[in-house]
Length: 315
Image (cartoon, rainbow, N blue to C red; front, side):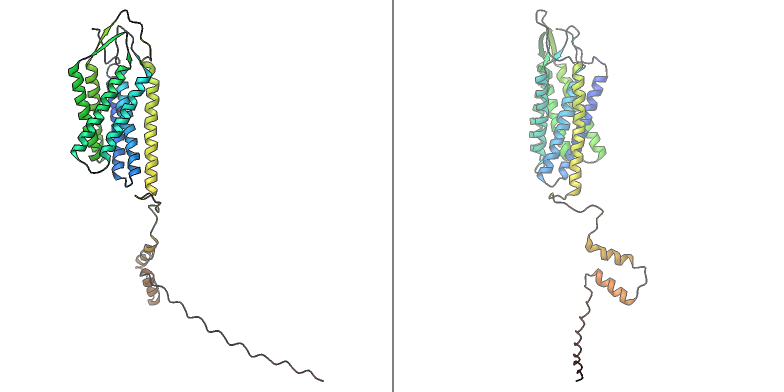
């Protein structure tokens, strides 16, 4: 077996992987919190879709490939297949989205959370090992079944805990703590799966083709930026729409707008310290109670003036 290295750039790879996992988990938990407060099903689905991109795309997939930049086989170059790499991204976003949709609607239940966790954890494992199958080497990659089974269990447990946090946690401090726990679990699953790898090189095999690991820095940076900006803009747009519409989606008055029916009451209370005449007090009290001011009766029509006979002309 050939020696493999998982930390080519020292502690920078695991630190970067943890930070990406934490950021994605934190954004996802914020979005699921907004989804719980949404009254319409369409708005809730929108927040859950944003959360699936934040967690599946940012917190899991980007973490995986930023950590993979530290994987190296000193005796042979490592390349990656672009198609399978992108396919692993779809696995992560889709399965996380399905899990969030399952737990994000209806009543919370332990059975539903566990079932969604098993589904999402299986998708995360599919993402991880699909990405590993996209790795190109002039040889054969072997896996330790015990460590593979351990990575599967960690993935399912981490996904179940993440979904439970998504429907339960509120508050900035609790969300931050939950995001840190999720990031540790995701990174633990990744490095457990990587520890199961052993490589056997074949000196007669042709050189592997594909993308160099450092070349992936550009798409990873672009996807990271696009994910963060897209999640932020989508969240801001959804928040803006909710600020100006009520739970049923109909426009509502601004926060600082007053109900016209309460204005006379406020005016009456604000004039409590002013001395008013009895007639003025009666007018204010009538406005506060909604009474209408009596209208003056119409004036009677004046009788027409008698017509003056024409003067007789002299003959």
